[in-house]
Image 1 (cartoon, rainbow, N blue to C red):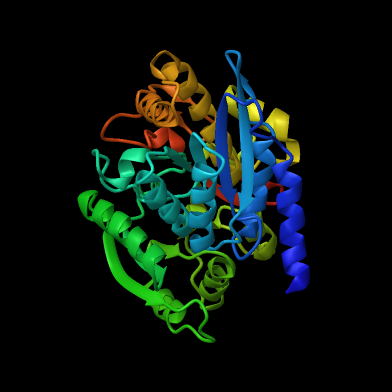
Image 2 (cartoon, helix red, strand yellow):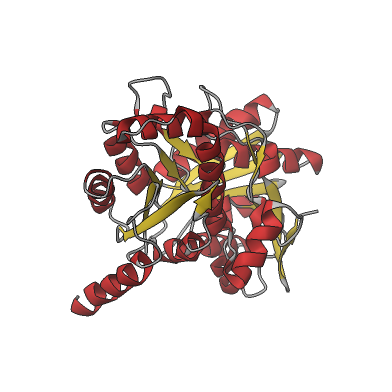
Length: 371
């Protein structure tokens, strides 16, 4: 325990020296999960902070980084400290949906805009609602599900078996995929939930007997790989689709060559292709350029544009600056980021369209676009 606390302290101490609020015109609080269960994602995001804009049209921008240890309660407390004690004008965070929800709810009451790099559902956007102050750089699960459905239809795979881990993530994906499948006339022949921690799963053998055109698996981490292995062991040799949660290098390494005909949606940042924002992101981050880091990079792009758009309307007091930044974010149109093109509005604080989704598949060299 002492070693874990010491490690967290060192991480925070190191990252906090990235910037100081002294003499900064704009202060940005950054809350990430640098320890705890979400640390693999948080630590992929942390190096990006060092490359976010420090000067925007002559204004100095400072970033104060905090580790919420993958704890939503701590994420809330840190965001409050940054807003109240450090006078942060905007918060970026957190790595997790649960942490982001706590931050957004806490900052809405203080009138502080939040850009979350998680897949948090923002809810209502009108004044008085938490979503009014929240913006997001991660694509909507509905966009990801639509990418899967489009790929299924393009390959005439219409009889689908759907399997999801039991819990909110599985429910969210079933809501999106099930609705899209019905609209686009796919036939979901079976729907099953499963416990990721169970020692045995009966459903792979049942699905192999049903012989659907494809299987949609909603899982994350080791369960995503185990589901593929269980289906192959049961004799199912058809296409397997996963969610964007599986589009991480850990999935590649754990697959061990057994992931032929496994596909999943991902953001364009997953592949080293294209130019513009993606090329700059890869050039600056090198091997540390990841899809999850791209969500933080895009938060910096949104912040820079919002600073330019809000400069004429910003007030000397903190409340006026925060409100102007929020309005600046909401006015952004056709801004190219790593993960897509952002066009915000009073009804949409994500602003991404289908250009934010590609279908990828593992191969011997890493990732490639699915055919």
